Structures are given as structure tokens and as C-alpha cells.
Image 1 (cartoon, rainbow, N blue to C red):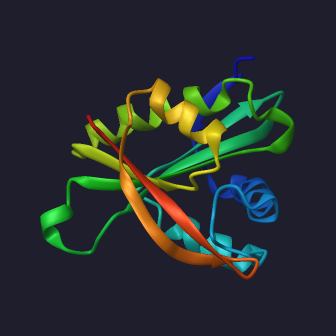
Image 2 (cartoon, rainbow, N blue to C red):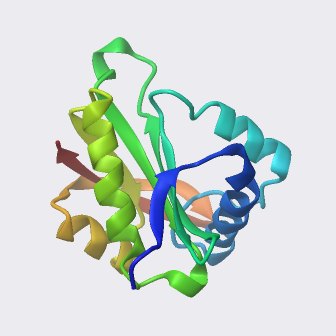
Length: 164
């Protein structure tokens, strides 16, 4: 399946971005967040993702079905060329190639915005996500052991990266 379009996110997309993000929180496969977010939270997040830290969406039949963003990796100037990555796909569209399309476009944007590297953090058990990242050239760096707690259990986090 191909998305009708990949485009920069606009304020009118924030509700769908929020809905898809909350699905990711519920599913416990993509984030250590456990509490559902509200529209005020997501509007604030969106305002912080303007200019260099882009947000893009995949649209199919006039509906946003996925999103990806470049996020600050560190506030230290030494890491100015490194971005952190977020990518979330609506449950109904997972496994249909939307993630690949979003990620390839986000990498193009990252290079135009003078990033030379993208890092990401994923759960070791998120095989679908790792499959996507490996397919697009991301390499395994290592693990943070017991990096967080999810539903009362310690969770390791896998670190991956790609030089652009």
C-alpha cells in the first residue's frame, strides 16, 4: 500500500497525530509513556516541532494515517547535527509500508536541515520497528538496560543509528 501523500504536518493534523500517538501508548510497543496525552499536550509538542525539527504525515483518502518527526537529541551544541526520531502508524495501516515511506522522506528532510545522523531508541521486542530500521540502513549500537519501567516491569531500550 502506498500513501496518497507525504507532507509537512499542519495544525489541523494535531488531533490525528494525537490519536495515533495514543494508540502507540496503549499498545506498549513504541514508547515508555503510559498515560494518554491530551490535545493541549500535543499542541505544545507541535509548536516545539517547527523549523528544523520537522513533523511530517502520511495521508491516505484524506486522512492522516501516520506521522514521523525529527526531535532534539540533546541541548548541547556538540550534538547539533544529531536528531532523534519518532514514527507512529495508525493500527489499521501498520505493516503496509507507510513507515518506510515516512522514514525515507524524513531522512531527506534531515539532510536538508543539516543533520548528519539520526538516532532512535526502540524496545528489543519491537521486531516490526527494527525490521523497518534495518531495511533502511540503521545499525544496532547497543542497549540501555532497565532504562525505564512499563507496567511495573523494567524495560531495556535498544539504541540504533544511521549516518546520513
